[in-house]
Image (cartoon, rainbow, N blue to C red; front, side, top):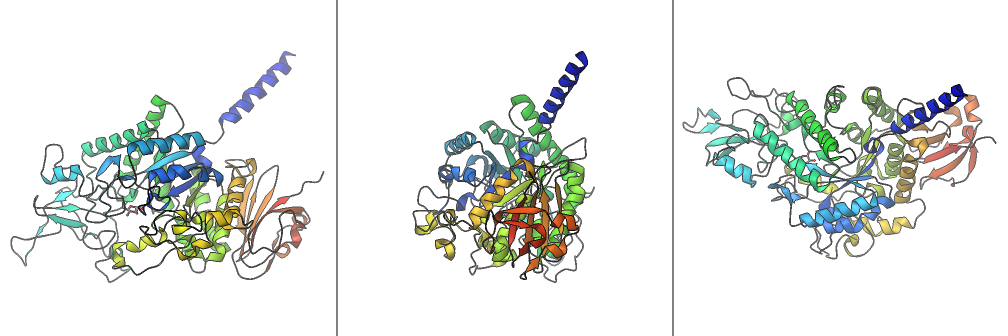
Length: 574
Ligand code: GLC
């Protein structure tokens, strides 16, 4: 009897410990990026704001999201649409007030949604008080930014040349002369965005205070901006070494002209990520609550991602963004094999080691997915991404298949073309697509808004929106949950065009996507004949599909029309 009881007790302990092994909230989150200027305008000035977001938060639950990340909402002169912050602990009046932000957080908490904000530690605005103090060499601010004397100009005695040949992201020298201080300051991005000097401990303290301010208000984490750009190389004599030519372009004004061995991915960056992670973890230890999460924006190799995640002793970002997908989606010849390679690049390295995955398909710096992969494949991408393990990251509007707006910009070198993918969200077919009561919105509304909008798509069974919702719903079922060390997930290209994902261990789901414009028959592609004899039921079909939900079929008889993507569920024998 005692033996039986102790065995029973053992199983209770075991099952409880299994429960505690449950994924943390962020590990299989559905994250939605809101670009606040463009999501919902509550006061009719043509620019989106916090009250607008709060008003519409329920929509995120409707589409199955578990968290949202807001692009910058802080005080800013808007030289880079808010990525140039003049006060890190206040809301810009165009977006509202701190009270509006509190109200947003409150509603989000009631809805069970996590809210993350952007953290932009690499630079401030040139209108930030800290920068003004630094120009004046005020006590404590002298070295807050990266200042340098520059080189003597042999052609113009008394004049100075930039300290190094470094080129900023948006073109032109990374150094700007400041008349008042009689020195150059460094700016990796626009000249209105002077870089902080992270070799100064006071800057570390200031940034931790920024994190604390927003944590105290109740945010669930941060997306860290421009991670690889935090440090630049300085030689022992205080000079900055020139970067070598890349050979990629002859345009000496363009950032690609140089190889960024001294201005990106310097070794100190990893330590900085560990410092912020430690701060967040400690905050949780002291204040309780759920894990506060760090996302990291870094267009880097998987080797660097690995370091940014952590080394087993120290941890950095929970989710360094996987931008391999973005790179893949730009390829004109994208097919099932390339998709497989891109998934494997991550699964065989980062997932294998850390059991962490995330799949970035869009953001505010990119063209819309449909414009990159072709409109006929945008739903296919949304379905496949939701079927992969880990976190989906959806840029607002991708769920309804919004397209980029293209217009003549004065000088596309300035980065203005990034606005093409930032047009107002299309809620309905009213004035300004329901985004604003004003017909004058900060960017034009895309012309297709009468058809491509939430209201219309809610009512169409196979709309992008309904397909997105259905795939996100499946993502959060037991069969699709992060599989960790257990089985229940396999993937691969069956030929050039057909990609297959298998999910579930007790139940079995097949996701089959046809990347190509030809009819594909699955029977010929299956490795096992036995497998083909099993019966499956259609549970999700794209708009091109000649099949219906509920149709039953033997796997070997499945065919896919061009661009068709389906999810099938195995019918278990009674
Ligand atoms: C990031 C942002 C981009 C911004 C830059 C400078 O790359 O995504 O929009 O311009 O950082 O902050």
